[in-house]
Image (cartoon, rainbow, N blue to C red; front, side):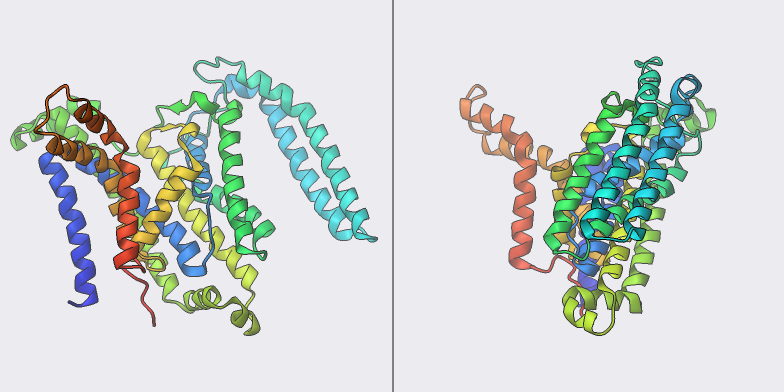
Amino acid sequence: MTLSLRNTGLFAVMALMIVLVGVMQSWSLAFAIVNLCLISAIMALGVNIQWGYAGLLNVGVMGFAALGGLAGVLISTEPVAEAWSAGGTGIIISLIIAVITIAMATLVYTRLKGTGKMRIWATILVAFIGYFIARIFFEPAVEAIESVEPARTGFLGGFGLPIILAWIVGGVLAAGAAWVVGKISLGLRSDYLAIATLGISEIIVAILKNEDWLARGVKNVSGLPRPVPYEIDLQRSEWFQGWATSLGATPVELSSIFVKLSYASLFAVVLLIVLWLSERALNSPWGRMMRAIRDNETAANAMGKDVTARHLQVFVLGCAVIGVAGAMLTTLDGQFTPASYQPLRFTFLIWVMVIVGGSGNNWGAVLGGFLIWFFWIEAEPIGLWLMDVITAGMAEDNPLRIHLLESAAHMRLMTMGLILLLVLRFTPQGLIPERRR
């Protein structure tokens, strides 16, 4: 069997499993899984750009995804006029002071002559003075903003623009945060980057949970505008009711499927664009250079390549892709819930997608995104069916039977571990390994 035929067969099996969900459970659930698989595949591509291309260990995937979700709120929600009147000016002034402080601290550090300790202490002094001045304007403004109808708003709101624009802005926000992290930690040992990304991810999520003026914190922002029609609008339209009748389906059922298909079409376009760009980059001289740096940094450095600059470049690109996926996830959910971003749990899941699919292969990352998220969703019903079959001969009130059926919900993590172990045992380089040229 040729390699291309084998890869096509793997994707065909994945499609067949989704079809089986539609036939045996419901098509609405099947298309819901497809949407989440598409977003997961984009996130896996972002991690693959960092790890598969350059060997960079990013353990803070969810932090950059959360910045993408924040972009959905800042772009799509309507501005809260009362909140802006109460404290918007103070927020703007404090942000301007923060920017001036950063610029002054940088200027002092780079221009001040003298011993290293003098430069460091002078920079720290400038930073502290700017910080306390900014707090003078920031704290009263935050208190005033959060007191404006806290049950309904209590934040500044956004720009009231189409939410699709948030996908681009989410990538920009994540790329900006990645640039800051990369400038600090890249060029040091690889474990420093892992620690820095995990730390910044926890910091980002903590800020989003606690700064209510920004995105309501743990109160969440719900009812974000959609780029696709609403089910209730479809059900009320005469043409849709007639279409549902002609297909032998109810308007309620068909409207749910139609909306999910609309989302899937948008997400598939983004996935294809990211995949095409990733393949172009991987097969270009830039991609060959990145793989050379990944395989032997010392040799690449000796050949005149700026390893640190290239690492920063690929790290920012990968985080930008993750930020886009984060904005898409918020768009699909229709709400922004900072508490749902669990850096370690879901970062592990994205890494499993990349490893199982095939590190260094973009098509492998896509397959891994589909496969792992499919089993993450379906592990519980499959486990419940399996436990029901195993305990079929037991009495209804048998304690062992009750325990096994109640434990089916915990099949997810065991399933992920089992898949990872099987793939690492039989195909250590992933289901679709990297092509060595």
